[in-house]
Length: 122
Image 1 (spheres, one colour):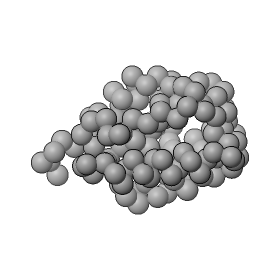
Image 2 (cartoon, rainbow, N blue to C red):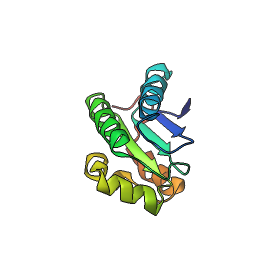
Image 3 (tube, one colour):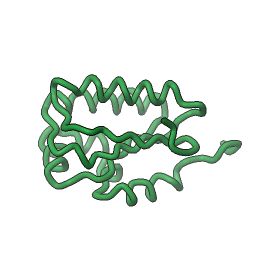
Image 4 (cartoon, rainbow, N blue to C red):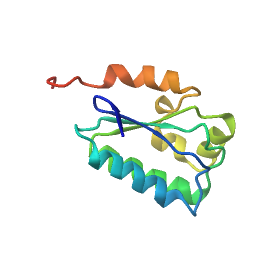
């Protein structure tokens, strides 16, 4: 569901691993495609994601490339130290960008709001 103008906040309620990484990617794509206005940013509320395996890392890398082609920024909020460690270990941190990984959801939302153009702006 589109949370605000040009913004989707998506809560994924499980660890990301080989058995569900395709679900994560498909849901993000479906949310963007079904949004009533163009989406410029997806914030993943990742409090429930404590682990991320290699397969999920590759899927996120592919998703980041697809989103970049569409001009959509991917941001993770509520990233705990375990998830961040997995992101670093599987090479996802440089793909997402450290500027798009936040310990709190509030910080993630505060960081993306200035980047979101308002309707009618170029």
